[in-house]
Image (cartoon, rainbow, N blue to C red; front, side):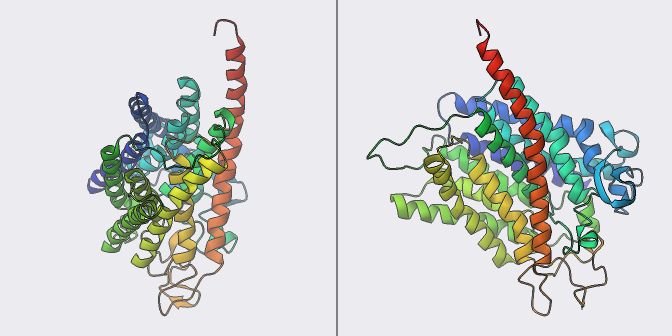
Length: 433
């Protein structure tokens, strides 16, 4: 029951993402974006219930011994070796073997990640294409793309076993799945911008670049706070994490410091460059800081969480400038500066800052000892004193996982958007449309 309460609280993360996104819009656009955000969350919940859960966690019983998951043991994999699993195939509509308390808790625990992956492209593309086309893109991400990627690193798939099969550290590690979801959603959003967006006109000669205007600053700040609160509940929402003994006060400290770092650097940067602190950049920095920490909360020390959040916060205005004034891409909801920056940093943080104090036996690697050290867990380049660095093994595992997640997203979402682009061109060419 306690897991379910934390899971509901964790949904504040995607809610906060919606509020921060609409804070930079004006006129009637905030209302339309808010409705699109709620629609995306509803779409994510239904798609994950119908088939996404089965694709993601239909084989999780093969890699875990949590009571209540014994029936989730069908993993589509190489016929010669289950360590190369690709997709789960049990638990559709949360019926039968997926109707246990443990399985339902996992549905709630991973729903915020599915919502984040769906929200980023949906908010970006809603005004660029007809609503039904945007819904198709969101449906593909929620029902297939992210669940399959999630299966690879947390449902029994091949990325979980890459530590054993490929010798890559403890395999791909994303504690909550949200950082990877941010990468998947951002890649989908970028593809949508490229397929359906128009380049911004060149900046008039003599006009200097400016920060995005802030239309609803209070809403953005509230959204940032909600995202930080939701982030603190993500780990506690997952019964597998509780059974693994990963719940500790360090999780909350790391999340708070990452959010604080994400807020402070944009404040200082905008104050230094424009003479006034910018609330929208600060709010976006908080969300990017949260996304940069949630993949590694249990595995990194507090100073690293602060450094991660600060780096993410500083990169948000820089990435915004790159998108708008160098690449001339229109991204008013900041899906890429927030989602892609935060997600990438979060995934890579495990391979860089993992200190080895937590995660013993993670993904079946080093249950007794790792790298010759008894009790050592998930480790990157900078281990705690007395532990051995795992470099570049863990970082390579993270890079392989990122490439796989981005590649699958580009393949499936790119194919859909190409088809929709052709249909949209045909629709607009029909007389009377």
